[in-house]
Every structure is written in structure tokens, then in C-alpha cells.
Amino acid sequence: MGKRRNGPPRGGRPTKSKPCMFCKENVAYVDYKDYNLLRRFVSDRGKVRARRVTGLCPQHQREAASAIKRAREMALLPYVVGR
Amino acid sequence: MLIVIPELDEEQVENTIGRFRTIIERTGGEAGEVNHWGRRKLAYEIDHRTDGFYAVMEFTAGERTLTELKRMLRVSDDVLRHMVVKLPPSYAHKPLPEPTEATA
Image (cartoon, rainbow over all chains, first blue to last red; front, side, top):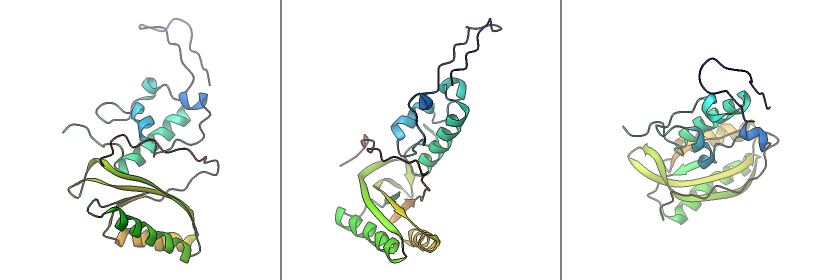
């Protein structure tokens, strides 16, 4: 899914979208048990990173988010960091 | 996937998991290999415990298995937390992530 938004955007850098990481690796199921991978998609506060940061496609962003929530339930990932 | 309380020793953990395995088999499900992650630190405290034994098992289950298994998991004092997840048909077996924060 290499949507490329070209042309001069209003302010800021020109956007160059990369293909979604999971699409690139043909991942059909984002596993909640793979917490080390999921860690990439949460901030250091433990929050789910926004799509514009993760660069995931809508489908995989959704799947990653629910995988993170499952991982949180099983105490593989924290709900909050530092409190 | 389930988390067993850290107060038990390896053998007792084995027994606990074996109990659920028999429940699955007795009610007509098919239980696969148990994947022991071993003792691991929890990401947050559950019932004042900071670690627990993790185990993952794949199984097939009908309605009867599921209700019975879930009931037993809820009732059991040895199980800190559990989760039953329906796997997609395309699910491929992947090697487990290495337990990085494991405490021996």
C-alpha cells in the first residue's frame, strides 16, 4: 500500500509515506504475544502511538492496537509507565 | 495463555497446567503442546505480585469445553490471569519471543 502524497504540503516537510511494516512482511495476524515487536508501537509512557508515527496502514494499525490491548491484559505491556 | 502464581514451584505449575489439559480433553477438545515461558516479570502488579509463570497452549474446543475451561480458570486460585483467544485460520506457528525480562 504505497500511497504517496506528493506535491507541496502546507508547511512542514514534504510527506513521503513508507509502506506499512506489516504489509511489507505479509503479516496476516498481529500476535499479542510478541510484546517486543509491539513495544515499537507504544510510546515510552505506554500509550499506543498514532498512525502517523507508526506508519501502519489502517488495517494493521487497528490490529496492532488490539494486540497491544491484549498484551496489556496479560501484563506483557504496561497500561501506564511511571506513576 | 495463562499466568500462574509465582509461589508455586515448577512441578506444581506443571500439575496446574496438566489439570486444565485434562479438562480440555475430557470435554472433547484437543489440547496441543504447552509452551512454557517460565517465570517472568509482570508489566504491572497483579494482586501484589510482581512476577508469574507464563504458559501458552493451543487447543481446539467446542462450546462445552470453553464454558467449563473458563469457569475452572476463573475459579482456580493458582491462576493469576488467563485469556482464551480465537486464532485466525491463517495463524502460523512462530517461535516464541525470548523472555527478555525473565527472572530465574
